[in-house]
Length: 276
Ligand SMILES: Cc1cc2nc3c(=O)[nH]c(=O)nc-3n(C[C@H](O)[C@H](O)[C@H](O)COP(=O)(O)O)c2cc1C
Ligand code: SF4
Ligand code: SF4
Image (cartoon, rainbow, N blue to C red):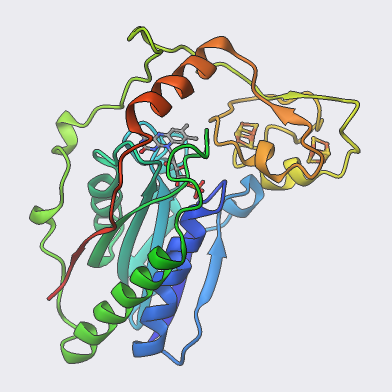
């Protein structure tokens, strides 16, 4: 079998999780190697990916507001397709909850023609703050994900026709899925939908790394004056080698403070739902 890891991963957690699963799979059903397809940057989502029989694809996204990131979901729906390929879904989330994200991803892939063989949710350092799950996925998580990939591979080797019973997945039915509403410390709604990252121009040397990674193409015309729709993924903030990018809105800061207050002490293990 050919094994793939295909992922959207602005701050790297989902890439780590998807690759760890793919490594385990490839060691059992492949030749130990897998193809890595990073569809995070805007420019990487121009083409269509069509997988076929004999392919097993680990497909990963981060959880945003308890769902698959809404601005990126249409690409998965329209351009990641299968005719007989198998998929192992993975979502990462930042110590709060993954709510409907894993089920939504699995239903999307199923609709796209994949035979689902598993679904995994893994905690990852929150893109907004390292006080939530800082450093995860850590070495233990990576080892556990590798073993999960191997376990799926072993089951497939015994019976390649097995498919996941999707009814065991946590999450609401599609018609009642809702986006999590971010709150401030006083419980009021935090409003930062229109925020854009700012740039300290005394630190920016124009290297273009933010332009290369932004999933929404916000820096196409200027690395200091972003345009279009920003999904607050924090990729530009984390990638900037000079610490020049930052968000400054009071509501976003208040939301982060509320998350740190409410979810920093969660200790969440990897959850998986697999073919048996
Ligand atoms: C806009 C946004 C919304 C998020 N919403 C949630 C959420 O609802 N629940 C949660 O636990 N983590 C949430 N997170 C944290 C991410 O899911 C987590 O950091 C994820 O591992 C990031 O993946 P990446 O490193 O592949 O980009 C959110 C992060 C961002 C940037
Ligand atoms: S990554 Fe940082 S230094 Fe490089 S262009 Fe962007 S803001 Fe400037
Ligand atoms: S501009 Fe917004 S969407 Fe683009 S990388 Fe930065 S935070 Fe993400």
